[in-house]
Length: 549
Image 1 (cartoon, one colour):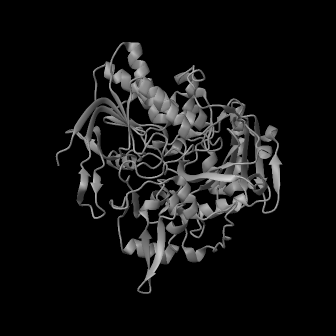
Image 2 (cartoon, rainbow, N blue to C red):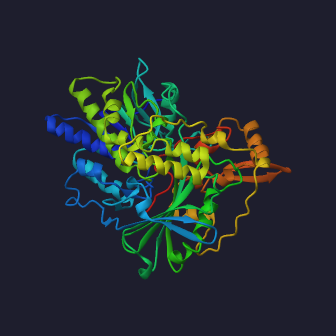
């Protein structure tokens, strides 16, 4: 197929905080060196920020380094954290843990409550002003390899194919984008990252990556209930002690509250529905009064990398590197990763600039992982490296206690001499349905709790129905049958957008995929017990168009 070709010095896939920080740092380094380099950023969302979703409380340490005058530049960091609260929920009551008992690294003093989508829009404008070319609405569909097997760029997805894969009347082939170095910043469980990990065996020395599913709503609440700067986290109900997760509630802006719920995806019970657990959480007596009389404005969901240092793959390959959440930069107990993602992008950019200055191309950027290991990112994640394994092994109560002890030891300069590895990938933790108790979820009331379809409507999805399905089944018969019979089709419950539906035809149950509902959370690719579902990006510009998420 004849394709248009574009060439750059550096290509960055993904316009999240890691990718944009890398692009801006490259231009800063080039300006300082008196050189001209071309930098391109591809974003599959219809616009910058369209697919960006996070809590989010940002530690500004990396932003301070990247753009020290960010305040004068109009960065959307306008709500400093004023108070931390940590609550344990029971079915009917709640208990607040004194902040003085929490490890110091859990404190949010000096941080800001933000919309990460708005932040990325602003950061993108700073990168464009520095000369970075940013193209939204273009999905990187596959890796382009050179003659020696090195990464030479990417190919964007074709546009205008019909549902059966044929060229439609508006067909346009994807573009080849060549680059001397390619930085992968596509976020959690990216399709290119998955391909690179397999081709270059990047995970051969790593623990399995671990994930959580974060579900978030933005509400506007009554003025008398709004407490700007309040950061509240909770553990406990409605999750059982053997299921990891918790909530966040952040007050910011003009009467806005981010309400979110995270479920660790190593849960065992295939009857569990993270979406419905979130709806139950909002009905708790300690939570419901905040939302009563308010208005739900938006909804979304996203997987979160939780494995920590021991789950990092090899970060470099011939021709490029993994940055941000493509590698996994989240500090799980702090519930923060933006600062680490940005710093990883900045360090990768400096490594690329050094290589370009030496007239190199398409080789391994060995100084990048070395620099990362000597950075605050490593120190940040090393201090909490055993928390997630403890939660997985001992459950929420004991795991939190043991993790808290280790974090207190780290606070006084003591580090345990061992690093616990993760024993299983999340999909391996799912137990057969017959071995686990069923869960009876209450019907939504339409005021505080809601159904999936009305929620997805708030995600502003744009998706041409007449395009190939981007959710690929490796085995369309046997594996689907096993999932239904053995696990009671958990995809209809772990998906927070109603993509997977079981329909009855000819007295048999069949899996129906409503791809037009997909909000790109990647949970199906992660949690499917048989690893039969492979997520690939649909046409560029498809998916959610989040508003201030």
